[in-house]
Length: 61
Image (cartoon, rainbow, N blue to C red; front, side, top):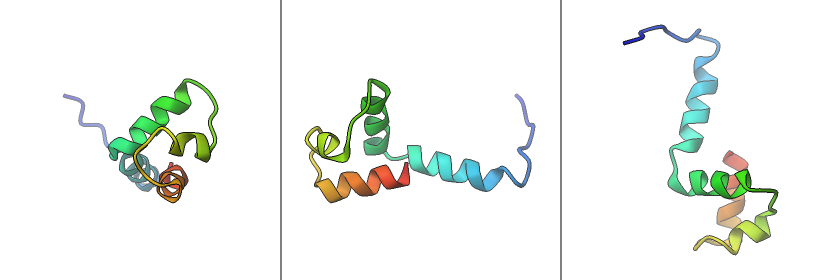
């Protein structure tokens, strides 16, 4: 097992990235965006959450 530690300066960034992708809705949004561009309105139509909810998820990403 590789036990190499990340530098202290990179750890906060990694924590934010892992925190962002920990949410299943955000991972689903990323999957949609991997197939092409979409605005928040288009994304909101694909998920059972409000426009504002999708907007907040996109902001985290």
